[in-house]
Length: 292
Ligand SMILES: Nc1ncnc2c1ncn2[C@@H]1O[C@H](COP(=O)(O)OP(=O)(O)OP(=O)(O)O)[C@@H](O)[C@H]1O
Ligand SMILES: [Mg+2]
Image 1 (tube, helix red, strand yellow):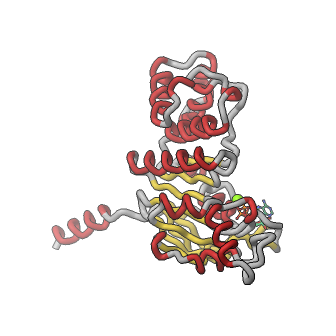
Image 2: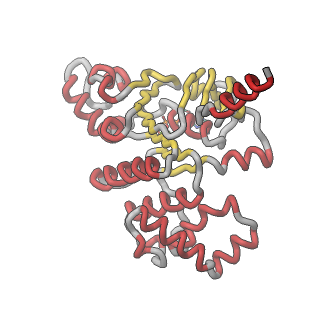
Image 3: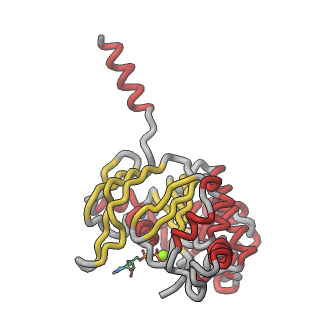
């Protein structure tokens, strides 16, 4: 009997918890504006998920709930099996360290050398003294680690360059190297390529997907480019009016579904008059979608 119980327990412990479980997750701003409305979602470890949808749909708010920078108004959020909906203080900070975020405006310190911006990925794990020492003279080990992360994103030669002398695409690579150093379990990328040209955007999305694959990280990326989402992600979530409109493999996403997702949001192209134009605009992901 005792043996059966311990085997059962071992099986339960071996079961992998989802990275994220959302149940009725809701965020209301200022008591009136419901940006995220009762979202139910499960994301498994190692999954690569793209989130697409019109401007104002609530995608960034969803990401901010997922990286614990805004508080849940209602519903529940579990990260790796732990209910984090009401976390505070040290446990909140500790859980945040498991999540790395890459933003559109990569949040680098422009006047610092690249190495210092990359090493900032370790700040959460360092004491104040370690952080200050690293700014003055990084240890050889840290130099090597930063160099390795920059090699992984393809710009090792920029280690000692000033960050503001890099191109936009290179700066985004520095931001990715910084997240790699943080070594989070999950990487959330909120429109990481909106400020770079389409060729670079393609390269950076591909890089993030491949790195997450190699290092067994979960990746959730919010993209304005439907083409990039469909090309690189096995799972695509359409988000609209604070809710999941669809959650499918790219092969199951029709042009009609995309037109519905963005319906009424594509400025200058009446949906009923020119469906092809709308689909073209949507697939190219255009700033046109940024209506209102
Ligand atoms: N801190 C905030 N305070 C009040 N309202 C907010 C706040 N953040 C977002 N909102 C509102 O929540 C709604 C959803 O915004 P959100 O930024 O999540 O949309 P989005 O889908 O990321 O849009 P975009 O594609 O333009 O980035 C918007 O109406 C926005 O004005
Ligand atoms: Mg946004």
